[in-house]
Image (cartoon, rainbow, N blue to C red; front, side, top):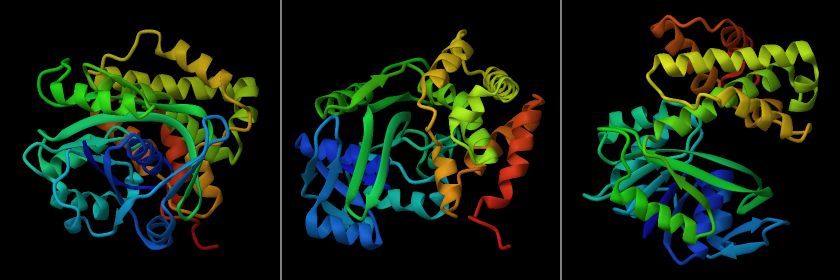
Amino acid sequence: MRFAILGSGAVGGYYGARLAQAGHDVTFIARGAHLAAIRRHGLAIRSPLLGDFTVPARVEDDTSRVGPVDVVVVAVKAYDNVTALPMILPMLGPGTSVLTLQNGVDSASEIAALVGEAPVIGGTTYIATALVAPGVIEQTGTHRRIVFGEVFGKLPRESDRVRRIHEALVAADIQAETAGDGRIPIWEKFIFLVPLAGFTGGTRLSIGPVWSDPYVRARFVEACREIERLARAEGIAVADDRMQQIEAYVGSMPGSMRSSLLIDLSQGKRIEVEALLGSVVRRAAHRGVPAPIIGTLYAVLKPYAEGAPPA
Protein backbone atom coordinates (compact mmCIF):
# COMPACT_ATOMS: atom_id res chain seq x y z
CA MET A 1 0.00 0.00 0.00
CA ARG A 2 1.03 3.60 -0.47
CA PHE A 3 1.07 5.60 2.76
CA ALA A 4 1.70 9.27 3.52
CA ILE A 5 2.54 10.24 7.10
CA LEU A 6 1.31 13.74 7.91
CA GLY A 7 3.22 14.51 11.07
CA SER A 8 6.40 12.44 10.96
CA GLY A 9 7.49 13.09 14.52
CA ALA A 10 7.72 10.63 17.39
CA VAL A 11 4.41 8.84 16.72
CA GLY A 12 3.80 9.19 12.99
CA GLY A 13 7.46 8.74 12.16
CA TYR A 14 7.66 5.53 14.17
CA TYR A 15 4.66 3.93 12.51
CA GLY A 16 5.75 5.12 9.08
CA ALA A 17 9.17 3.58 9.62
CA ARG A 18 7.61 0.25 10.59
CA LEU A 19 5.47 0.32 7.43
CA ALA A 20 8.46 1.23 5.25
CA GLN A 21 10.53 -1.54 6.82
CA ALA A 22 7.74 -3.97 5.88
CA GLY A 23 7.99 -2.93 2.23
CA HIS A 24 5.20 -0.39 1.87
CA ASP A 25 5.64 2.78 -0.16
CA VAL A 26 5.80 5.46 2.55
CA THR A 27 6.23 9.21 2.13
CA PHE A 28 7.00 11.20 5.25
CA ILE A 29 5.77 14.80 5.49
CA ALA A 30 8.23 16.78 7.56
CA ARG A 31 10.01 20.10 7.67
CA GLY A 32 13.19 21.83 8.80
CA ALA A 33 16.08 19.94 10.31
CA HIS A 34 14.02 16.75 10.64
CA LEU A 35 13.29 16.72 6.91
CA ALA A 36 16.93 17.39 6.06
CA ALA A 37 18.18 14.60 8.35
CA ILE A 38 15.72 12.04 6.94
CA ARG A 39 16.64 13.04 3.41
CA ARG A 40 20.37 12.64 4.10
CA HIS A 41 20.47 9.61 6.37
CA GLY A 42 17.02 8.00 6.43
CA LEU A 43 14.76 7.74 9.47
CA ALA A 44 16.37 5.95 12.43
CA ILE A 45 14.43 4.09 15.12
CA ARG A 46 16.21 3.38 18.39
CA SER A 47 14.37 0.70 20.36
CA PRO A 48 16.42 -1.08 23.05
CA LEU A 49 13.80 -3.80 23.55
CA LEU A 50 12.65 -4.37 19.94
CA GLY A 51 15.84 -3.56 18.04
CA ASP A 52 17.20 -0.56 16.16
CA PHE A 53 16.72 0.00 12.44
CA THR A 54 16.96 2.73 9.84
CA VAL A 55 14.78 3.10 6.74
CA PRO A 56 15.75 5.05 3.65
CA ALA A 57 12.77 7.33 3.21
CA ARG A 58 11.07 9.62 0.79
CA VAL A 59 10.34 12.85 2.61
CA GLU A 60 8.57 16.00 1.44
CA ASP A 61 7.42 19.29 2.89
CA ASP A 62 5.03 20.02 0.01
CA THR A 63 2.23 17.46 -0.36
CA SER A 64 1.52 18.56 -3.92
CA ARG A 65 4.69 16.64 -4.81
CA VAL A 66 3.31 13.44 -3.26
CA GLY A 67 0.12 12.88 -5.22
CA PRO A 68 -2.74 10.52 -4.32
CA VAL A 69 -1.99 7.73 -1.84
CA ASP A 70 -3.95 4.81 -0.40
CA VAL A 71 -3.79 6.00 3.20
CA VAL A 72 -2.94 9.33 4.80
CA VAL A 73 -2.01 8.86 8.46
CA VAL A 74 -2.61 12.08 10.42
CA ALA A 75 -0.32 12.33 13.45
CA VAL A 76 0.33 16.05 13.82
CA LYS A 77 -0.31 17.78 17.13
CA ALA A 78 -3.91 18.99 17.22
CA TYR A 79 -2.89 22.64 17.63
CA ASP A 80 -1.35 22.50 14.13
CA ASN A 81 -4.58 21.42 12.44
CA VAL A 82 -5.40 24.78 10.89
CA THR A 83 -2.23 24.73 8.82
CA ALA A 84 -1.65 20.97 8.59
CA LEU A 85 -5.02 19.53 7.58
CA PRO A 86 -5.25 21.38 4.24
CA MET A 87 -2.07 19.50 3.29
CA ILE A 88 -4.20 16.35 3.02
CA LEU A 89 -6.06 17.59 -0.05
CA PRO A 90 -3.35 17.05 -2.72
CA MET A 91 -2.90 13.46 -1.49
CA LEU A 92 -6.55 12.46 -1.93
CA GLY A 93 -7.61 10.14 -4.71
CA PRO A 94 -10.94 8.38 -5.31
CA GLY A 95 -10.07 5.55 -2.89
CA THR A 96 -7.88 7.35 -0.34
CA SER A 97 -8.53 6.73 3.37
CA VAL A 98 -7.51 9.26 6.01
CA LEU A 99 -6.64 7.60 9.33
CA THR A 100 -6.31 10.00 12.23
CA LEU A 101 -4.24 9.06 15.28
CA GLN A 102 -4.44 12.48 16.93
CA ASN A 103 -5.21 13.01 20.58
CA GLY A 104 -8.71 14.08 21.51
CA VAL A 105 -12.18 13.35 20.16
CA ASP A 106 -12.55 16.18 17.63
CA SER A 107 -10.04 15.13 14.99
CA ALA A 108 -12.27 12.98 12.78
CA SER A 109 -14.92 15.69 12.57
CA GLU A 110 -12.35 18.40 11.87
CA ILE A 111 -10.85 16.37 9.03
CA ALA A 112 -14.31 15.48 7.69
CA ALA A 113 -15.21 19.17 7.57
CA LEU A 114 -12.37 19.57 5.08
CA VAL A 115 -12.45 16.35 3.03
CA GLY A 116 -15.94 14.96 3.71
CA GLU A 117 -16.89 12.05 5.94
CA ALA A 118 -16.33 9.24 3.42
CA PRO A 119 -12.48 9.09 3.53
CA VAL A 120 -12.13 9.42 7.32
CA ILE A 121 -11.27 6.58 9.70
CA GLY A 122 -10.83 7.27 13.42
CA GLY A 123 -8.10 5.78 15.53
CA THR A 124 -6.08 6.12 18.68
CA THR A 125 -2.66 4.88 19.70
CA TYR A 126 -0.72 3.75 22.76
CA ILE A 127 3.03 4.20 22.36
CA ALA A 128 6.00 5.76 24.15
CA THR A 129 8.33 7.41 21.65
CA ALA A 130 10.29 10.64 21.46
CA LEU A 131 12.03 12.56 18.71
CA VAL A 132 15.48 12.74 20.31
CA ALA A 133 17.29 14.34 17.36
CA PRO A 134 16.44 15.26 13.78
CA GLY A 135 15.83 11.99 11.96
CA VAL A 136 16.04 9.88 15.15
CA ILE A 137 13.09 8.47 17.08
CA GLU A 138 13.58 6.63 20.37
CA GLN A 139 11.07 4.08 21.65
CA THR A 140 10.85 3.20 25.35
CA GLY A 141 9.05 -0.02 26.15
CA THR A 142 7.35 -2.19 23.55
CA HIS A 143 3.85 -0.74 23.19
CA ARG A 144 2.96 0.09 19.57
CA ARG A 145 -0.79 -0.29 19.61
CA ILE A 146 -3.32 1.28 17.24
CA VAL A 147 -7.07 0.78 17.64
CA PHE A 148 -9.18 2.12 14.78
CA GLY A 149 -12.42 1.81 12.85
CA GLU A 150 -15.17 3.58 10.99
CA VAL A 151 -16.61 6.64 12.74
CA PHE A 152 -19.26 7.88 10.31
CA GLY A 153 -22.33 6.27 8.78
CA LYS A 154 -24.16 3.27 10.17
CA LEU A 155 -22.21 1.79 13.08
CA PRO A 156 -20.97 -0.67 14.18
CA ARG A 157 -19.40 -2.13 11.07
CA GLU A 158 -16.00 -3.32 9.90
CA SER A 159 -15.34 -2.22 6.34
CA ASP A 160 -13.10 -3.81 3.74
CA ARG A 161 -10.72 -0.84 3.89
CA VAL A 162 -10.36 -1.17 7.66
CA ARG A 163 -9.51 -4.85 7.21
CA ARG A 164 -6.92 -4.04 4.52
CA ILE A 165 -5.24 -1.39 6.63
CA HIS A 166 -5.29 -3.71 9.64
CA GLU A 167 -3.52 -6.40 7.64
CA ALA A 168 -0.86 -3.93 6.55
CA LEU A 169 -0.27 -2.70 10.10
CA VAL A 170 -0.05 -6.18 11.62
CA ALA A 171 2.37 -7.30 8.90
CA ALA A 172 4.53 -4.31 9.85
CA ASP A 173 4.79 -5.55 13.47
CA ILE A 174 2.29 -3.00 14.76
CA GLN A 175 -0.18 -4.13 17.42
CA ALA A 176 -3.29 -3.14 15.47
CA GLU A 177 -6.88 -3.80 16.51
CA THR A 178 -10.11 -2.91 14.73
CA ALA A 179 -13.33 -1.65 16.28
CA GLY A 180 -16.79 -1.82 14.77
CA ASP A 181 -17.42 1.66 16.16
CA GLY A 182 -14.14 3.58 16.01
CA ARG A 183 -15.49 6.29 18.31
CA ILE A 184 -15.48 3.96 21.32
CA PRO A 185 -11.70 3.38 21.65
CA ILE A 186 -11.08 7.08 20.98
CA TRP A 187 -13.38 8.09 23.84
CA GLU A 188 -12.15 5.32 26.13
CA LYS A 189 -8.63 6.69 25.83
CA PHE A 190 -9.91 10.27 26.16
CA ILE A 191 -11.53 9.47 29.53
CA PHE A 192 -8.15 8.87 31.16
CA LEU A 193 -5.87 10.92 28.89
CA VAL A 194 -7.48 14.26 29.72
CA PRO A 195 -7.13 13.85 33.53
CA LEU A 196 -3.62 12.46 33.04
CA ALA A 197 -2.63 15.53 31.03
CA GLY A 198 -4.51 17.89 33.34
CA PHE A 199 -3.18 16.61 36.66
CA THR A 200 0.43 16.06 35.60
CA GLY A 201 0.46 19.37 33.72
CA GLY A 202 -1.30 21.29 36.46
CA THR A 203 0.98 19.97 39.23
CA ARG A 204 4.13 19.82 37.04
CA LEU A 205 4.64 16.32 38.47
CA SER A 206 4.91 12.82 37.03
CA ILE A 207 2.05 10.39 37.66
CA GLY A 208 3.71 8.83 40.75
CA PRO A 209 3.18 11.68 43.24
CA VAL A 210 -0.29 12.36 41.81
CA TRP A 211 -1.51 8.78 42.11
CA SER A 212 0.09 8.07 45.49
CA ASP A 213 -1.69 10.93 47.27
CA PRO A 214 -5.15 9.63 48.30
CA TYR A 215 -6.89 13.00 48.03
CA VAL A 216 -5.38 13.87 44.65
CA ARG A 217 -6.00 10.35 43.37
CA ALA A 218 -9.68 10.59 44.30
CA ARG A 219 -9.99 13.88 42.37
CA PHE A 220 -8.24 12.26 39.39
CA VAL A 221 -10.74 9.39 39.41
CA GLU A 222 -13.67 11.80 39.68
CA ALA A 223 -12.30 13.78 36.73
CA CYS A 224 -12.35 10.55 34.73
CA ARG A 225 -15.95 10.02 35.79
CA GLU A 226 -16.84 13.50 34.54
CA ILE A 227 -15.66 12.53 31.08
CA GLU A 228 -17.25 9.08 31.26
CA ARG A 229 -20.61 10.75 31.94
CA LEU A 230 -19.99 13.10 29.02
CA ALA A 231 -19.19 10.17 26.72
CA ARG A 232 -22.48 8.51 27.58
CA ALA A 233 -24.33 11.79 27.06
CA GLU A 234 -22.71 11.91 23.60
CA GLY A 235 -24.12 8.45 22.88
CA ILE A 236 -20.77 6.62 23.03
CA ALA A 237 -21.07 3.09 24.42
CA VAL A 238 -17.85 2.99 26.43
CA ALA A 239 -17.22 -0.15 28.46
CA ASP A 240 -19.27 -0.50 31.65
CA ASP A 241 -16.09 -1.27 33.59
CA ARG A 242 -14.05 1.52 32.03
CA MET A 243 -13.32 3.15 35.39
CA GLN A 244 -11.95 -0.08 36.85
CA GLN A 245 -9.80 -0.51 33.73
CA ILE A 246 -8.43 3.01 34.13
CA GLU A 247 -7.60 2.60 37.81
CA ALA A 248 -5.72 -0.63 37.08
CA TYR A 249 -3.93 0.91 34.08
CA VAL A 250 -2.84 4.12 35.80
CA GLY A 251 -1.81 2.17 38.88
CA SER A 252 0.49 0.02 36.74
CA MET A 253 2.27 2.98 35.13
CA PRO A 254 5.86 3.74 36.18
CA GLY A 255 5.81 6.56 38.72
CA SER A 256 8.16 8.55 36.52
CA MET A 257 5.67 8.64 33.62
CA ARG A 258 4.96 12.16 32.35
CA SER A 259 2.18 13.04 29.95
CA SER A 260 3.16 14.49 26.59
CA LEU A 261 1.40 17.69 27.64
CA LEU A 262 3.66 17.98 30.69
CA ILE A 263 6.75 17.32 28.57
CA ASP A 264 5.76 20.04 26.10
CA LEU A 265 4.83 22.40 28.94
CA SER A 266 8.18 21.90 30.67
CA GLN A 267 9.96 22.76 27.41
CA GLY A 268 7.95 25.95 26.89
CA LYS A 269 6.22 24.51 23.82
CA ARG A 270 2.60 24.81 22.76
CA ILE A 271 0.31 22.31 24.47
CA GLU A 272 -2.80 20.41 23.36
CA VAL A 273 -4.95 21.94 26.09
CA GLU A 274 -7.76 22.91 23.70
CA ALA A 275 -8.00 19.48 22.05
CA LEU A 276 -8.09 17.80 25.46
CA LEU A 277 -9.43 19.81 28.38
CA GLY A 278 -10.98 22.56 26.29
CA SER A 279 -12.94 20.04 24.26
CA VAL A 280 -14.38 18.52 27.44
CA VAL A 281 -15.41 21.93 28.75
CA ARG A 282 -17.13 22.93 25.50
CA ARG A 283 -18.88 19.61 24.99
CA ALA A 284 -19.95 19.41 28.64
CA ALA A 285 -21.48 22.89 28.45
CA HIS A 286 -23.35 21.91 25.29
CA ARG A 287 -24.68 18.69 26.84
CA GLY A 288 -25.39 20.14 30.28
CA VAL A 289 -22.99 17.71 31.95
CA PRO A 290 -21.11 19.14 34.96
CA ALA A 291 -17.32 18.94 34.69
CA PRO A 292 -15.94 21.14 37.50
CA ILE A 293 -12.60 19.39 37.96
CA ILE A 294 -11.74 19.39 34.27
CA GLY A 295 -12.96 22.97 34.04
CA THR A 296 -10.60 24.04 36.81
CA LEU A 297 -7.64 22.25 35.26
CA TYR A 298 -8.49 23.87 31.92
CA ALA A 299 -8.40 27.31 33.56
CA VAL A 300 -5.00 26.52 35.10
CA LEU A 301 -3.45 25.32 31.82
CA LYS A 302 -5.20 27.51 29.24
CA PRO A 303 -2.72 30.43 29.59
CA TYR A 304 0.03 28.05 28.38
CA ALA A 305 -1.76 26.99 25.19
CA GLU A 306 0.72 28.84 22.98
CA GLY A 307 3.73 28.03 25.12
CA ALA A 308 5.18 29.68 28.19
CA PRO A 309 3.44 33.07 28.64
CA PRO A 310 5.51 36.23 29.12
CA ALA A 311 6.69 36.81 32.68
